[in-house]
Amino acid sequence: QVQLVESGGGLVQPGGSLRLSCARSGSIFSINVMGWYRQAPGQQRELVAVSNGGNTDFADSVKGRFFISSDNAKNTVSLQMNNLKPGDTAVYYCYVRGKATKWRSARDYWGQGTQVTVSS
Image 1: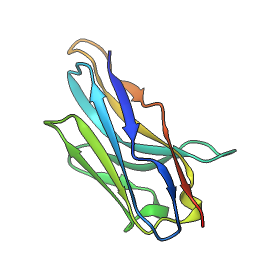
Image 2: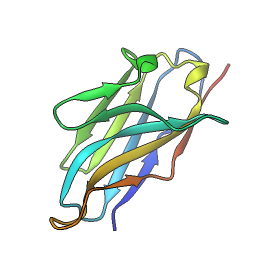
Image 3: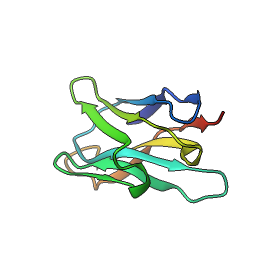
Image 4: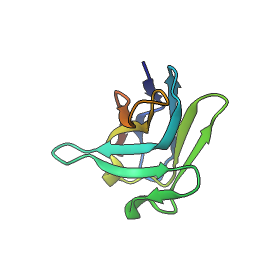
């Protein structure tokens, strides 16, 4: 069973930085996409940054401020968030789309989320 566990959230002042990490456990045959989504109160979950190994897509609101990286050896994906703004306040979710085995269809996997609050 694939599990994703986020860490690194917290309270930060505007202009500050945070680094989120996501650790994946459990066997997975292949990964199509991995990255981060977020959901603010009363809002729909939205894409922050996702990578398919070759290309990375960022939400327009975070371009130039957020950066995604992965360590395949450690089964982790990280999100470096710089120059944070109050509008970045949300629960951030780690996301992986992949196949558990060679014969199964790809499916979405989600972490439990980590709260990021940007406030003075």
